[in-house]
Image 1 (cartoon, rainbow, N blue to C red):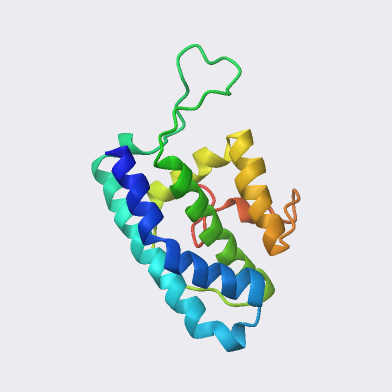
Image 2 (cartoon, rainbow, N blue to C red):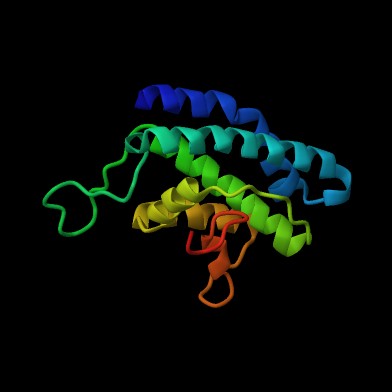
Amino acid sequence: KRSMWMDWILSNFHSVNHDLIDSVARTQDVAVTSRRITSAHNGYVERFLVVEREMEQRRSIFYRGERKKGDEDGHSPLLSVADFPLGVELNRWSLCWHNLREKQELELPVPDLPLLTAYYNNLLQLPAYRAEVFDAEAAHHGLDVVPGGGEDLLTLAGQSKYD
């Protein structure tokens, strides 16, 4: 089941990923690309709603903050192959949304995603995810992640911090 989700994520997010990243992090001309941005954002939302529904039914498929037994140092999270592409796509979309809101003053609507919000919060607690996924993508967008200045970047797009 987990490898099926990895394959689904890899095959279903490519077009929206390309359109959103290219339009937001590279082109950065919202006037020229606003329809493309909105379409890609809506595509991400549609796909994340599928994942949210799956999480409601089978929470054990994706990472929930668990660690391997005997993991005192906190370096052995119980991740599956599905967590890697999902975690990257969720982060890319979220930081594109923050980029649009902060730099372009464009705030796109986002439905309530409580399980994906909790999932993202759990991933952000992992030092490797924070450094290699979150920090790297934030730098790609030129977003400043400093305490007091960019803390809301740690909140999933359109969600409140403590969902």
